[in-house]
Length: 284
Image (cartoon, rainbow, N blue to C red; front, top):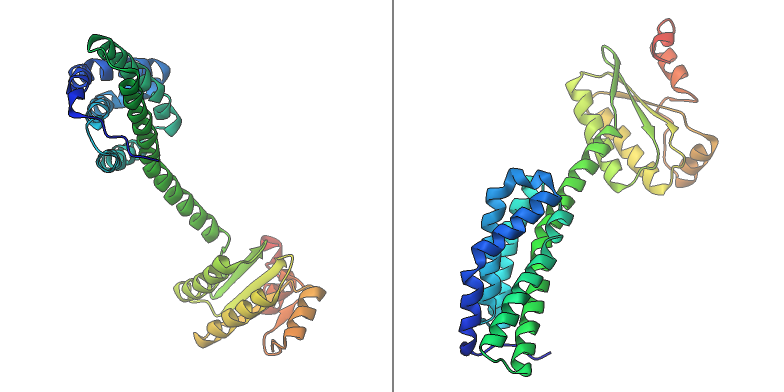
């Protein structure tokens, strides 16, 4: 698509938009504050952002497409990030986009009548406005997506950490009850948390309970073997409980040697072997 670059004679339109930038920004601010009361807290900051945006809409008319995109990207990066970090919702900010299109469209209409714009000239102006609005929305949304992605990743990491709960039972004894599916990220965390917690808690006896794990495939079996070997290297005596017949069959088929690792049908029997026969009612 050919680039739309308006001639310098449209300076009168740019000036008309710039002259009304403060009033226009204030009107939008008032409307938005009525729609979303929470925005009143950030009214001053948002007013400045809106004044800058109206100015950008006016200046964009005399820029090349490359210049427009660069200016809009800079504005969107700074403003979008600031709004996202304030905790302002994206939907509330996008709600005001039609306000700019309508208000600036009205200025364009009045200026076009005053200066007798041709249909072709008016079409070019409206084309630039549409492209500018599209770019503003795009570059403003990007920081929101980045902030939300980081927040989601942080939540996922917290959930992963919670999915590897090393539970101290007594002095020198801890249990790792695993539940659900074990993927690459969780397997790595199991290794890290097991070693870290065992060292922190001075664990001698460590029971990995697989009662809540539905399936042990090749990947999980190998990772489990690595965890057990690593625990031995730091002086911990690992034990496994809750191995189902299907799991046992998979381990045998893979040729992994768990013969030197004590295994038990249930966590209760593993703890009993360690010496918790009289205390089991408190934990099981």
